[in-house]
Length: 516
Image (tube, rainbow, N blue to C red):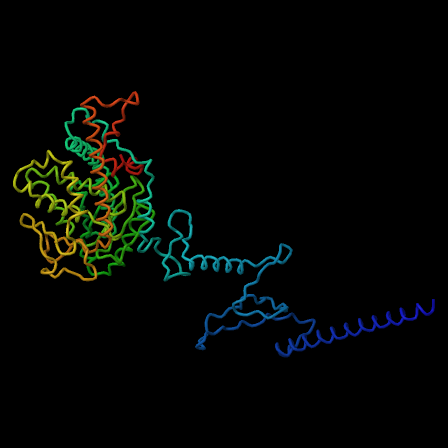
């Protein structure tokens, strides 16, 4: 028994001595740490009966040695409590669990700002409360916002929304009153459908009156802020060539705005429009050739574009009205081509110049040139207003398949002509396939040079012509079979859309349907 218990007693004494030695080393280490911390902080005299003074504020400096705003370091205890570890300038406390002490409100707001900055840096948009209050200029982040607006809105989402419309939502209500049974051939079918489509999409008196009320509202708000300002509508509103969801183009003629920076003027106009409760969201496009502001009205949900001291638009509207009235026998044909082309490009997001598409004025000039240079119309062999369907297909064919964009430019002056881009000096080796259209008011101005996406527009027009051609052959076969009695109805009733040709490339979407 003694021989067994003796080693156990010696081992127990050794373990106790080792434990005492480790505790002594730990105490010595703590003392050294406290001494080092005391040396770092410096000598501090403190008596129990004297309240502890808070640590002084330290002025942080940047790399150049210039002092910044004096404030506590992030994470520094304001009441002078001891810090368990070193805290740097960029330190941000992290709460590991719910049992830890709650973070102060200042630190919580700082962490929230950091999170927003990280999301902003990643390119993600902030979601606000819907009134545009979350939008701010990137260059003034962290300062008080004066204007709630968007600068140079990215158009990619806009184009994608137009191109990704569900085909099932597209309808052809214009064919409801078309009498297909009395048509002798496909040309007559397409002509009647074009007439029905233009009649359906053209603005009614009520629509035009509603737009007039909006123009009056905007004019009154701008005149109250700028007494010398004069609002002049132009473009498709003046010519009545607008679609149900088309824009209202306005120009402000003001002497006081002419001597002020354009961006400053546009900001002031945006502020005036919002204060008048005309809209809650304004987009400023300041980097375009013609700076404008864009917004959607609260009542009516109509798009409005406003420019400042741009008299060319007013003159252009008068020229278009002159073409509509002076082109003998082609007034209805011009209106039909313009409305169909605008509707076709609008549904595909290709009707805005700042997104690379064709503007309204360029479309009108293309249609005018097409009618002026049409060989059969020039020789008087056909009546343009009785062959609208054929003219529509030939319009898509010319500008989609055969027109030489690289070498030829378009002029509608003096009865219409083509000119060489090289001789005019408009040829660009880096942008060879751009469309060149001479401004009727200024021969030195190319009104379509900003349409950088004309290649895609051309491919789309060519594809539309191919679709319409195939549909025309199919409808011709159906007509021939019906006349010869080689058809059998599989349904008790027939849908008018079954014989439509335009519905293969056009349709009335929900946004257009709600505009009526």
